Image (cartoon, rainbow, N blue to C red; front, side, top):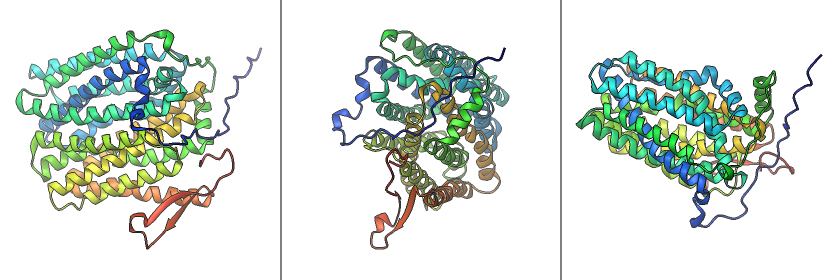
Length: 450
């Protein structure tokens, strides 16, 4: 007997919800009024600070053990390659099972891996292959953790506060990226990176405890997807059919492969260009995070959600990265990178929000896993590529490529959308601040370009 076909998932593009008036400043972090989200956000802040401490210590440790920027890129690749290969499977798991339970499992494994690194580093027996192995396991954890975490935000706050919660999460991540590298730089120059790994192990345990303390009755239940054949194919077809998912994913691919290899590039500039050592590496990453935090907070004030924001901010991010390659000194380099960090988060939050609000709840895990596969998997390819360019040619040339390719891609995507009648480029020689702008053409009701 032939089993009945799985229910079709709605693929029509609904109008993107808009905020008609700019929110007052007191509502910038409105989603934190939800008790469960407050608990989650507090533990997330602790976890992100510790995670960045571990990342900086891990990358610098590999650089010191191997003397190779390419080896740092390989570490990035080991951590993100599983998402590139297995990402869609993580989305299927996230759609089928309890997101909270999945996150508790993944964070427990992450705590164990951080503890292993801490023991190896503090006993002085750690080798590069140890870091590679742990990075690979953490990459496998990310396959399930990331889509589950993305979809779980909806369960915490519901549809009303989803966009604000995404921006708040991004802000928290950037506060962590600002504090973590600075603290890690201090630890690296005083007591060694092993303690950064130990702190991250404890932070992962805090996350597990906080997830267990959430009030289950206050969660917004997400219907579980039933087991059925062809669910991966269904998720892919759904994503490709919706421009508000497809084009952000295309831009994310270019940005991820090239422009998001900043840890590798900052290591190269700190070690080979500015000769500022571990503390300088931590400072460069902190300054990037300062700009990114500005972008994340700015995104909470966004009143409309537009495709042009995704394309324009990706192009701006790439342009600023390329511009930094011509900075004459460390001070000007740092200032441009702060601006680049701001543009990067304006792009990442806009793309994330647009993909999430464009996805049906029953398929959102698979859609987000595909998006994250592009975003993180692209970094697995880009880490070794940009690291190799920085080492074999020159860090400045690598940075120029890292920013230039996404900037050109943004122009090409804007032109494609223009031909399709969704976006248009405008030029105004009398307005230096808006010399070139990407704007939507007036759309029909229900158009995704709203």
